[in-house]
Image (cartoon, rainbow over all chains, first blue to last red; front, side, top):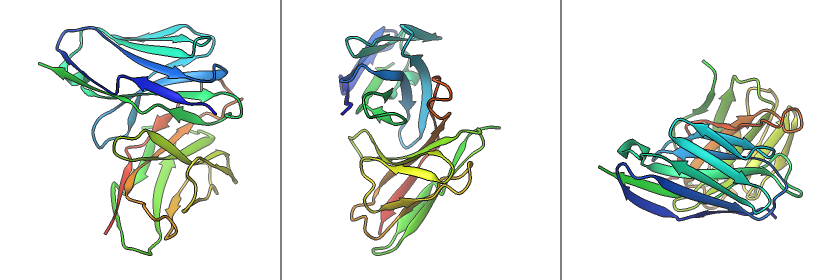
Length: 114
Length: 116
């Protein structure tokens, strides 16, 4: 059964710092991995989608990497800002017996202090 | 303006009552999903549908029911059999896997259900 883990559960950093959020998954036979942002009481906003054949994707100050063989992904946020404060979730699609499902990690809650 | 619309935003349910949460999308996506989110927990899959008139149970389907009569709509009914329904419910859609591997999922803004 595919399991997704995110470390750390919470992170607090001063404004301007570069930071890395981690996501690991147990079954490397994934189709893709997606990073989301969730603000309190809101839905999920898609940040980046990495297909299984890709190693990384970039959008503005965000860079996501994927190492399928080791079951790991990282989300790098450059020059963090208070507006980046939110919960970040990773989700994988695929894995043995898991076609069609999107399996989520527990999320990392980020606080960026001014 | 394409997207996923969930309604209502807030819903209150009395004990023993069935309630239905609406999810509509105009993205022309085949696949739709319902997730439940509890405080301090990740998203758990309730039901998903890859195509009209077909759906599968997720990890926590007990006490819930769905229908998929139209491509655009995937309503979720929380029945009286669901003993702890208070949660945040999220609906999502994507291109059906197998048609395109770039199956980016998009989410609605959620419905917060409270038992009173």
